[in-house]
Image 1 (cartoon, rainbow, N blue to C red):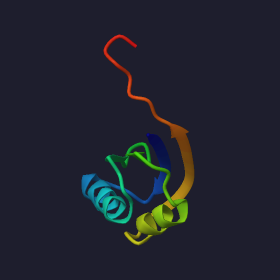
Image 2: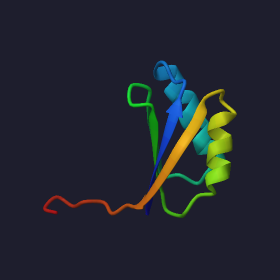
Image 3: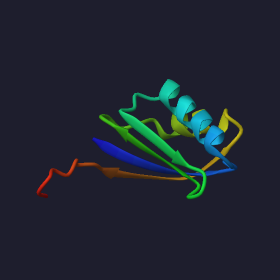
Length: 81
């Protein structure tokens, strides 16, 4: 599993977050996507590495600007660890 965090500028409300989430879901094989206009970022969990340019293009197609993309391995934490 991989966790991607994308800096997204221009989101102002929950509808903006929904637009970005929908675009990412359509463009990439994601398990979970969550955007926050207050943090200015979108977090994506995916079982495989993503094409970062395709991810950037999907976000930009909604009218928002995709900035820095951070990628890190993601391991779900269990109840005791």
